[in-house]
Amino acid sequence: MHTATENVLSTHLKEVKDWNELQDIDSFFVKFRKITPNEALSNAIELKDLIKHLNDSVPEKFKIPSLTARINILYNEALRLADLTRIGAIKAQEVNTQVDKTMAAFSNINTKINSILAKIRFENEIDIDVTFIGLDTTKMDTFFNKPINQIKEVNLLKSIKRKPEKIGIKKNRVFKGLEKSKQ
Image (cartoon, rainbow, N blue to C red; front, top):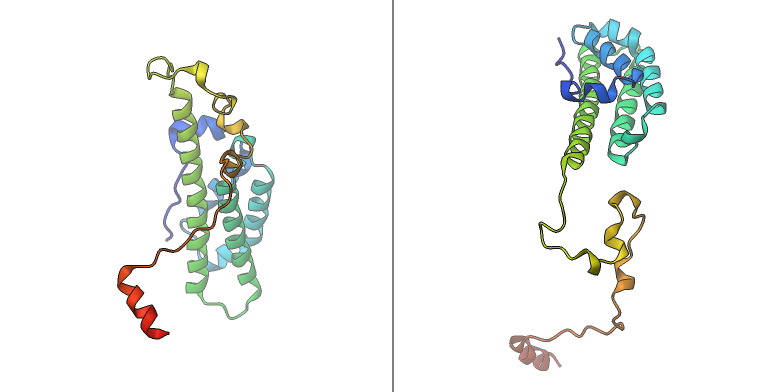
């Protein structure tokens, strides 16, 4: 008996309803809740292929590094499970441990999807009129008028117009006497 995976929240299901590969893997892991080590090994290759298809089919709004990393972790765990099929003297406990790790990696993906969608929903619900918070938009530069997703790179060092200067280390009065005695 394995722990059930985290699911995409019901409030977010319509956002992932067209992501068939995610649904296929989810239904695959439902079978893994009550699976024997031999059955897990016989299904490991198919699971690995499903996860590969998942990685290739990520919708645009989910193409962010943190989710990509979680999908890569899931794929690596599935590869380890598939590699266990080649080991003849593998113990059942080792297979069960790897199944648990693979299922936990999938849970992490669903949790991240939930947080991404919650963030998008929160950002879409924010409707602030800048006059209510006292911003004078006539004095804002073009940098702040752009949405965050359009800003590619910010080099804050260029905005500082100071000349480089040497930073001197001030010596503590307590140690001045020690330096003279060493010489």
